[in-house]
Image 1: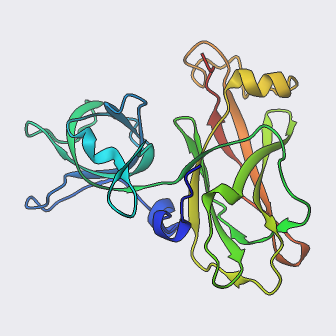
Image 2: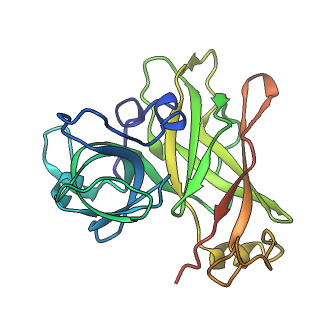
Length: 258
């Protein structure tokens, strides 16, 4: 399994949560627009987190990940902040939802699958802090946190997991876990880090938690697809001094999975 090293691939929370998509006013700039986006499996399009616009990629080769020797890994960027240049003199407007773009540069988010149940070791490591303003979009839950770790050791994305602890009504309670033995006298990571966790499908969640309810299932405005898929999400994590860190409650849509 490929091991991502967090200090090099994570971005600061301040660059994520305070990130507002905006049109670059400098006509000489090499990009016109930037926004967190999700890349389609065929790597032909991207969906914007904030605008929900669809961007057709004209230079998808830039999505190829490389190793420390600049050799292709066979993996591709799935999520990140993308800086794009519009083709054919286009510009963002409220009446249009699809654009052809060339990617100027990007900052990739580490991506990992959520799990349906706890897979933790006893006395797992504690977090320094958990970002309260996490969000869900395009099938991903984006969790920001500041971990603790042993001085001199590198953090790995493989040591973090997000799993469903329980379901109460229309709320899914998730736990973020740092699955290494608790570090004594740890070093604190002062800045927030972020992982985009791929959510399980609606079918998978209901198979494990059949009592899950959905938000206002009869409201066609909230459920435009004709079926209920909207739920509340709350994330907690083990904090220092026996505290519990928690996010604000936010909403997410569960994909059908077929």
